[in-house]
Length: 119
Ligand SMILES: [Zn+2]
Image 1 (tube, rainbow, N blue to C red):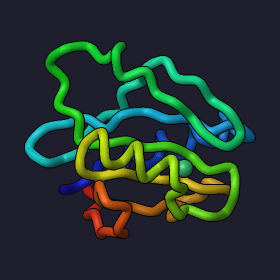
Image 2 (image 1 turned 90 degrees about the vertical axis):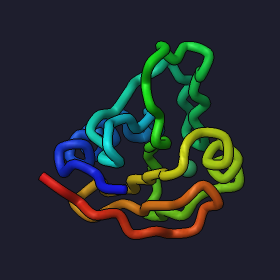
Image 3 (image 1 turned 30 degrees about the vertical axis):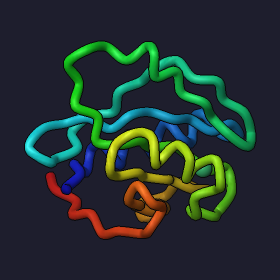
């Protein structure tokens, strides 16, 4: 799995704008490259964000999720692990202060993984 640089840049930007609330989006793309964020309606709070998967349009390949943490910890919470297990295979958490590199990549079990960043 790879991720486009622009996707990370956008995720950090939206995280900054949403702060102190979290934001959550889905990761989509093709040929194992995450190319786009897909926004569905979600309920955001300061400790969690619930995504409305029933609003997902047909025809999208969902690789996983991205969400923000308003704290400097990029570690998945208990609720995050439940979400990871349900949707896709790779998950990104971006954390405060949302600078380049303020992220963690995880598999569906919440284990940290490496993902190559491509242009
Ligand atoms: Zn989280």
